[in-house]
View (spheres, one colour):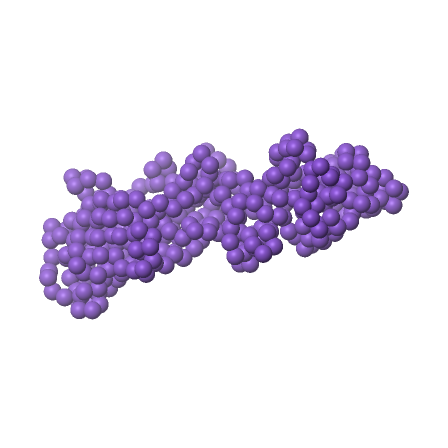
Length: 366
């Protein structure tokens, strides 16, 4: 009894934070505007975009579906997936996740984010502290926020503009110093203000994008660089308790009603037990009756059965009843014939993505 209710594009509530990489510059002079010295992160904005991809070994036209299951399908229908519905599908290149996260000093402190970076005269840097990152719980296919410790070292170079009010920064690994956590880049934009006491650093993190990573001078490694997005929830309008489009929703959640004012108008715009039975009957008729080829023809046949007083053979509920609105209450399995709204639960899905993060950060010289 599966149909497609493409109700929304996804967003992930609370997942407004992303991997580190907000950072840094270097120079060997001590004039105002020079990068050399230690800096403390004071402000961070990250624009985060993840798009679906087909990984090596999968068809180029691979797509991914986010589905939901009726919470009582196993008990009533004998199969937990018998009434599954598709809420959204993602083809290669489709945006799976997009958000802008902004943290001023207060938000950084509240989240537990604190980063210090030091640029030395020998053109090496050291970054320490705590940073925000999205991690995947593979067993449950869910993405969650973590704020781990970082201790990062590497090389840097900076080319100043003539006024030394800013320049272009490059970050690269130094195997002799240790592992580099920051993504490599050579085009970060550095701007000094407050007589060199404040640093603005903007750069694009392409470390997890299988095409654009080449712009950083790195070589793509599927096992090392690929990001997997776990989707455990969907947008919800809390006042109605329904899954909805992201622009209308005010929260996200794991379970809700399915709502469609076009396809489900007969049942008060909700997917109800009566609506589910009619939906299943339509699909069976199209599959088994050579005289019925589409939904309109199937519905016409059901209306004829209703006029003749026929009943659904599985539930014994008259078709005439099944074509009425039963959305006034929730479904009760002990009162099958009364129908009712069905509660659906998201089936967590994992999908490989390309990731771009546009970082804009501010730092105060220590």
